[in-house]
Structures are given as C-alpha cells and as structure tokens.
Image (cartoon, rainbow, N blue to C red; front, side, top):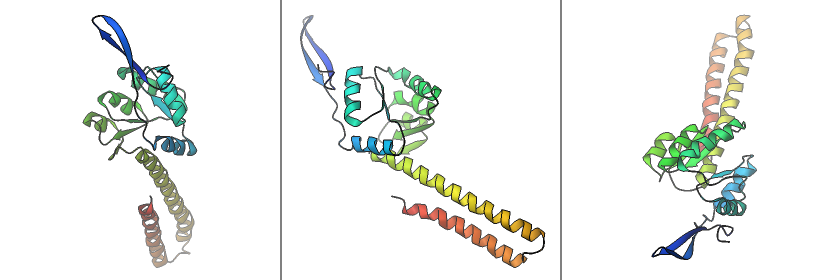
Length: 201
C-alpha cells in the first residue's frame, strides 16, 4: 500500500522484532510536471532512472507524466540502462548530480549535470546547469535547438552566396569591388543572425 502511494517502506525493528513500518516519500518539485510536459511537447520521451522500488517509481511517473520507468536500478547499473536505451535506437540525454551518475552521464549522448551536484558529475557531463532548477534542462534543450537552427540558416546563406557569386566572378561578370562588398555583407549577415540568439529566453 505504501509503495503504491509512491512511498518507500522502512521497517522498524526493536530487539530483533519488527514493530512497525515508516513511509518515506520525496516531495515532488511543484514545477516538475510542467517541465516533463514541455519536454514531451517538444517531441522527447522522458524516462525516470531510479533506485526506488517499482511501485514508488510508477506512482511518481504517473503523477509527472513520465513515459519510461526504470526502477530498482543499482548505482553501478545506471550506465548500462542508458546503453539499453541507446541500443533501442534512442539518443539519450541524462540529467544527474551524484558520483554514481557520472558513468551514465558519460555514456549518454548528452549529459546534463546539476550545478549544485558533485564535481565528479560536473566533470563527466557535456552541459552543466548552474542552478538546481528543472526548467534549466528545458532551457538548455531549447537553446541548443535554436543554435542549431541558426547554424543551418548561416550555412545555407553562405553556400547560396558562393554558388551564385563564384560562377559570375569566374565568367568576369562580377566586379571585384562588388564581390568584396557582397562577401563582407554576407559575413555581417551571418554574425547579425547569430547575435539574434542573445534575445533567447
């Protein structure tokens, strides 16, 4: 019953006899469900990797809307679980803060370490979130997507410019001064387009 309610049961023993049980439950961060919802809305599946028992993990996953539950995972098995997800063809982003998260953070395609976590976790991760705020995971993912979009835009315009200008220059139809000015304008466009990321929130 306690496990189904999302709590972990701890037995109390006195003089070799079990005299009771205590239910221990972590409070969920109030914003956690919204963070999960935003990640799912962006097309990501959200998995929970935990040492908690299956009943507790499933209850929490239901509350938060989490897709994949990996429960009863020993600390040394976390990286193996990440490998299993990758073997299914998934690209995995792992969020962690402890020493035992380090191998999984390294194994993941992208490791996110919580800034308030251990140095080992931060050394193992690709991205270090400076605060212990779940929204920062969403922010990092969305900023990465926006950055990639800008790179694609810049590459498109740089290639388009060269595809158009090089044949004209080779045929002598493009004045060198105009070509130089156009090249400078192309560089200014790329830098200006990239600087628009500063407005990202």
